[in-house]
Length: 191
Ligand SMILES: [Zn+2]
Image (cartoon, rainbow, N blue to C red; front, side, top):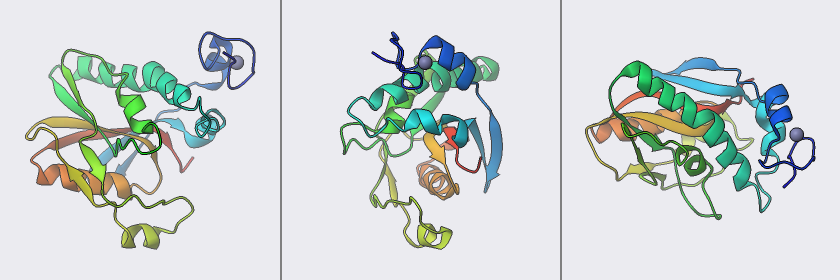
């Protein structure tokens, strides 16, 4: 295939040279309510790579970013924390072929990390793109969680914008007796 950035032939969707030059993680942290949100990239860094996401091969970039960035980050956290935990992806809804979040969480592979797929789904699949904060507040996602209860989990999402979606997700997980350790997102849209 060709590198999505420089278009030279590459075994991966991003060639090693572009990955090294252009995909250096720019880790940022912010607090949303009581939730700590860690983002691996500034959105402006990763945006050119996500432009392929609506193409038939768009799933490859998410799978790549999951394997090379999200999974190693979560697995490294596991080795520092020293105890097992679960991972829940936000809205792993497979409506249009694949869910971005599921491609990120699927790459996580560690015996002490239990990844529960498709367990936290929005009943209201409203598009927030370009919408105001008030609109987002007036149209909640209305999450339903159907996974195992009573565990500690790391929440995974692709992009954090206002943080409203993550806060809503945390609320639903708390109602199901889960403790959210923190959230990790691929990108923070405020950068
Ligand atoms: Zn390249």
